Image (cartoon, rainbow, N blue to C red; front, side, top):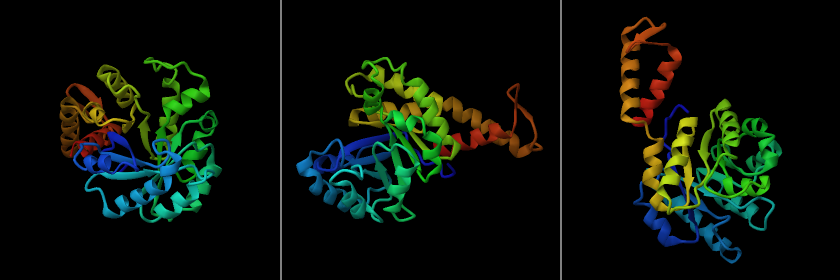
Length: 271
């Protein structure tokens, strides 16, 4: 990702809640995801769509605004896409299963609308590379639906999820896509959230989707470059600036071009 745009925290908000949307303008979330799907009751879907369109037209300041549409095979999906097309910069869609699904969604959108997809079915797990190559711009891991599909046992232990996280991330990175870890349902457990964020950040995820504003600060801290990382990156960049471009030594360790690329990303994110 050449722009190094921070996407540490991606906060889901129901598009049907104007107070929450207005409050979000003052929050520190890097991404706000207006939800038309799970968070909105059937009778509120049409009004929520109109609110999402109005919010997208008005803009959301420096924060990245994403709208999660209903699935295209529902009563509201096609109208969501038609209303948001060319208005929302990024549209997130649920339960994508394969490359054909991506192509179908893309056929409803103008070229400059980014399409993010929820990875939340067993079927999608077997076709991650095809999905990544079909025109998606981002993967968002849907842990709740995926746990249900896998028949995984609920609980704080995410051991069942680690292999899935690696698969999803590898497919996303192979095509330069955004990769966001899934939500932590227990917004009262800071230690659990911190552990989930730290693990996902160590894997290489860009950030994590959230369900409550109180989760933002922990998430931002976990996915931001640390002072130690920034200091290392600065030394690597400075060493290559005066070196010959080959393998050089920094603090008694050998570094090469790949480390410079890592350093550039860290410094870009820090900036």
